[in-house]
Length: 371
Image (cartoon, rainbow, N blue to C red; front, top):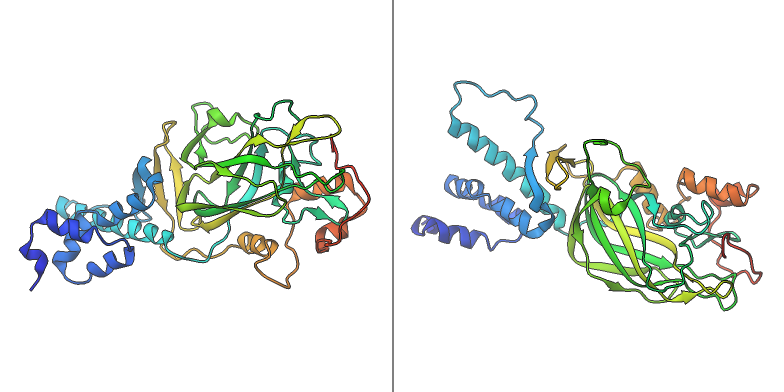
């Protein structure tokens, strides 16, 4: 006996809504036509997806691969067209909801965009935070803010992720230890907070993305995390989200709140970061996002129904992060190479291939700017 036929529709929906695994909902649709009709027409996969990823609250519509080349026949009934649309949405949301499930977590940061301030550009630029080592030979690798008299002045670091749609599970940050200064001080922040979202289109520059634009006015943040306390320790500190976060638009803002370390030389407070690492799963080859207006409404574009494969760039970053042992470091970011040449024009081979030097250098060396 089909027990759902003995229940009211609302009760049946309430029972099936208790399923929190999209694979279970897909299996339900294979039980019978009546069960399939209930799941698809009531949009249970969409409801599950919205519960899983609240960042989809501004989703306006879904653009399917067949929308551009599929012409509806005049003889086709409106009911049939509506059913086909519901089926396509069911497939999309079931596939998207699976991104929350345990999967290989990799580095999904693509590039560094801009920092709120830099003490000595390009030697201490944000691009150095993509390098997993805190030094290359005898050369320190880090980003440094400008010095401030007040410890409450915050700083921000803006990054672009791999693709318009990413699922982020955790972010790792390593404060920089100035080993070339007396006492080897660590220039960490008091707290860190994260924002994820997309660039805000405007009537003047719908498709342009100026790197040094005002972050407050040119970005829409669909997710803002809690404040995480940061330890004054020179290690890769892990900041894990309670639930995976869906980043729509592919931008991550790291907010560094509060300063703890004065520099002995000038008495000003600084924040310095050696490395930033974003862990999660890029869905760039499967989904895209088309931002519709300045309110943050967007269309979700379905590019493929295949499981996302690691791109060459992702594999390179994973190797750089130490996930592939006994492999050569990948090609470096061009800006990083230019920064290195600016400081040590004769040490190119060491920059490209050398492993990090584990021995501390007792000689003090200036790191540029105030350092």
